[in-house]
Length: 113
Image (cartoon, rainbow, N blue to C red):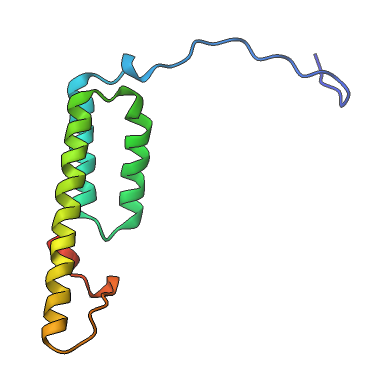
């Protein structure tokens, strides 16, 4: 039947919702979480890679269990501690050389992160 400008649109047929838990097993989910944290750690200078990893983790957050959450918490604690120590060491070095103690992002050595 042809559609006319004033005709009512047809209602879409109802469909079953797609649940991720039916497609992502526990082992695959844990491997995805591990892979995303490795990518964020190794490519911290690449904002697009980090953004995609965060988006993937956000899509999977409804499936996380306690083990996944502990793994993510440890990752955040370790990474921020290492970065804080690196910045502190750089600040101390600048202070001992008589320079400014304010740090700039482009002065941080991202290869060590």
